[in-house]
Image 1 (cartoon, rainbow, N blue to C red):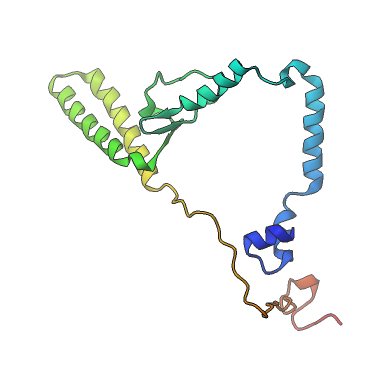
Image 2: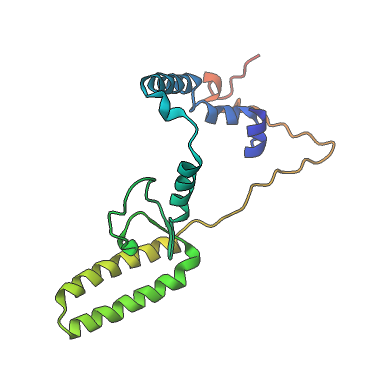
Length: 184
């Protein structure tokens, strides 16, 4: 608990304990018991070590998820439902480093829509417009993607100085006491 308080920069362990209270040990214990009961019902073969070929296949699945505009979040062992039309797929997690590439794809789609209109390829127009709308949505997502802030840095203590905070005894919420009433 003390380590978590330090990492989070809390001056008081009570602050950290407030967060920990959300993850009640009783809830965690019940979840672990549920997992243990479920495992007893499953065939023991499912809990064996994978073979080298199974492990290579598993790792290969994730290696193949890296695509032109980012990463495909498709689950292991599932086929592509969008027939590799990644720009339209909600499983595509766009990589902000590929923003220029996506902008070029959007420009190309607009040109192709213009050409399809000129040649009266109405079916093509509809498909390209669907792709364009999806690409523009991916671009919006890319532009608002969170920025990597790096790892947190522990604050340095000044030597000889111990900071202590006064308890919130003035608070109407503090231990159920009213403002101005202090415990002896």
